Length: 321
Length: 72
Image (cartoon, chains in turn cyan, purple):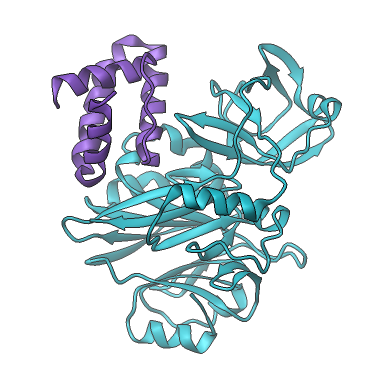
């Protein structure tokens, strides 16, 4: 829910456990308590998409038996698989452009045991028009970081399970050419298209590809997106890394994001998501400002984590049982 | 694990049978195991062990998947 500063302060001072997203000017005014947070001034609220530097998005966590908070750098971020509660959920927030986010993005898919630990998370950001610095907050100490990941671990009661899922409005056309990359990387020059080596930037230009549509990879019917960040000189940069030995295609064009979300939300059938986040690119390209996509409310983010880093996706968590 | 389900899961990991779960983590596990088995068929045993651990960890979710896989 979206609340004003004094309400967020009241909830913290009452000892509630909270997951918070807001502009840095608001987060820095919050008292210490049982909370973690990250910066963004974009949200999907009950009344639809909204940009606000005066409101905070707050999820109250009243379904955990116990919580703990840890802060990690790029050298130890994967300790999270060891520090998770056996039956739990990890809420991971990392700043956009940080080394820890890049490390997590590149290596998470290869980390043993990661899939055994439900991990929901997001990349914090800033006002795209005004610029700024992405931060995360460990509310237990009141400390903010631009180069660290903050994780809140939740221990769930016996018989309850956290299930992370996503809604992706994009899919591929299997008749399109298959694109493969040589390395796990956030920026590439070369790739193969149907087995033939090409200069990727030139290929995009020649084909007139709309790079607002992400690259998609089919993970057993679940599509994972990689969004193009920029094409400069002869290099193509992405918001999340591409991986070698994975088949990618550009997504089929989506014209009405909100209508497509409505369709996918109905298909997903989630009853009561306790948390969700949606990508800034969906918000911008899909013109979600003022448009509702119930029951999913939460921060609008610079990357989404459903175990691994995703782009242009809505990620949500349900507590089952 | 039921031997019939075990056999079907091995077929899924070899790409001989298709199954899509409603559980994202399970789909990710299938993709990861398929890739491992395609690169090294000898890794099947390790993948099956990981699968058993996964299913044991999420009995609420696994129940639905196991019932669906039994019907394949």
